[in-house]
Every structure is written in structure tokens, then in C-alpha cells.
Image (cartoon, rainbow, N blue to C red; front, side, top):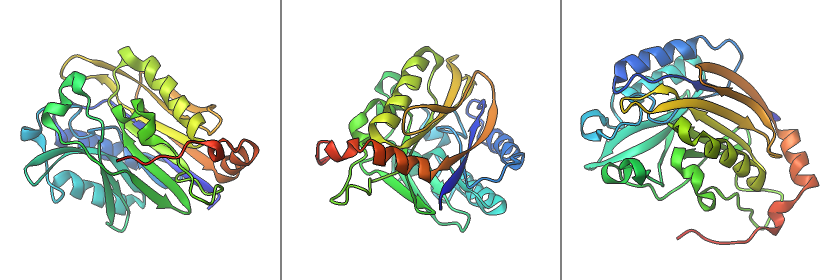
Length: 264
């Protein structure tokens, strides 16, 4: 329970070719040599950041979710990343949290990127997903959510030694032209929430000729960078340490002084 191993997969995505992306991602997952518990894929990992959900959306019983279930089971890992999902006639940018036993949770992206028209094609989610692994609590979010600190705020209950979560994960298709904001805000979320932050972004150009530089990061609760990779594909396994998290919170109990609020 004192450590948690997370593997980040920073990869190029083949534009709107789900079968190809699933095949290439499975090869990358099978190549992981270090023992790991959670594998994190980018946002819309089967298609890239497509605004054509009517062509590429799947149901929760579709091929990509079935692929996640199989790969998670065969490799004994928790697998997470987001997909285009259709449900009751609506389209969602949905993060799936898949356990090796086939159980899953999901989070629908709250903040849709209107600058690219995402709000015209996808329905916003209204609930956060905080998963639990070995006593670690993990808050799962998607890309543009990063710009909205209230949605990520780590709240404490009456027991101030027990914050809402320990790790904050963002999966993304974040363009290189705004990479400074990406790197800065990931560090800010770690510091203000006294949590580890994992940001997994894609690399390469998409079908709109928008270049993505990756800059995937793992950051500790003090805002110190434990892992960073830009511009090229990379697979990295990072071990998070609960003792260091708890020591940071004990020495700097800033969350105790945070404003209390409710999100309506």
C-alpha cells in the first residue's frame, strides 16, 4: 500500500483509425518491462481528437471497451484513457477505468473545448470519478479540465488528515502551441492540491495538422517533476511513494486552511 506504480504511454495516434491504434497500443503495453499497476493512455486514444463522433462513436459494449477489458485482464493491469462513446443518442468524451477483473468505472469530460467545437458534438459530464487502488485515491480528468482548478480541488472532510484524493490524472490531446500552459498548470494542480499529478499527452500531428509535443509529466506534491518527455514516443514507469505524500501534507498542512464550497 505504500507505493503505486504507474506507466505512462506517450504515443503518436493514427488519425481516425481505431483498429490501427488499438493494435499499436497493445504492442506498446506488451513491451512494458517494469512491474506496473496502472497504464495510462492519452485522450481519445483510438481516434485522436476527432469531431466526428457520428462516424467513430462506440457503445460501452463496443470493440474498444472490449479491447480494454481483454488487455487489462491479460496483462494484469488497470488500464485507463478516453474514447468516443455513444449512449442514449448522446456522444461523450469518456474516460474508462478498467480493472483486470472486468469491472470498470467511467468519467465523462466535464469541460468541452469550445475553441475546437467540442461543445457542438459532445455532451458534458457532471460527476467526478475518484477511483481507489491499494488505499490510494485517484481523481481522473481529461485534457481541458486542467484549466479549471475548482473542478480538481482536493477537498478535506472533517478528518483533515484524509483529503479526497492522492493522485490526479489527466489524459490529453494538448497542442504544442499551448504546451507552456499545460506544463505550468499541471505543476500548479500538484502544489495546490498536495497530490501527485500525472499528465499523459500524445505526440505527432493530427488530421488537422496540429502538432502535439507530448510533454507528459509526473509531478510530486511539492510541484517537483519526477518525469518529463517531449516530442517523441515514450513509455515510462514511475513509482509513487505514499510516505512522501503523507510527509508533505504533515509538514505543510495547507489543505486544512482551504475554503469550503460545493459544486452545484
